[in-house]
Image (tube, rainbow, N blue to C red; front, side):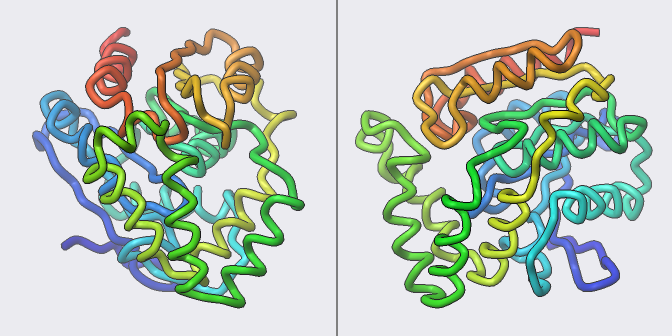
Length: 263
């Protein structure tokens, strides 16, 4: 296992693929860890040195007192790149990872080659959604995380996918139950407070936006909004709920690779 030492603790990461290949960073959704990208790794490592990490508050990474901000999480990514002596990289983030990607595109575009944001929006939900969840998780701890896990199957996957692929769905939703309640609540606050609607036009790197047709958490309308406000951005949509990389699998990977290969 590999860790980078940040000022406040350790950030857990995995780096796989050819040493001399361009770097592709993968950023997880709220309530998952770096293994949410497992299905993409065989295809991606054929072409890229793939760097994935557990966002602060998730997996084996540091859990610091909240609330967090997307800016803070973006700086974690830059610290990771600096520690590994990576000057520039492609970045692909899903949901909360997509918010981190937007922040990087707006504030640190010189560190990015191309950017992919998936199942995300410039603003996700509002305090009426996030505050009760934060309160419940901080009050009930791991019991609340188990309850969230059981409710997340319907948000993260369409019923037909969950029924046909119970092991795949369970693997992902179990990550939520294993997430630190404190870390989860702190990240919920980061998502709650992020709003990039007025800053998207400052993203200058090539951008691909991916959405899921059945995504109730971040509907396609949010993806269309990003695409319309970033000059030259591309858009793709798959039959999927919130975790399109898992549900669309090979088609998702192929679209990302196509975008990254197209100069």
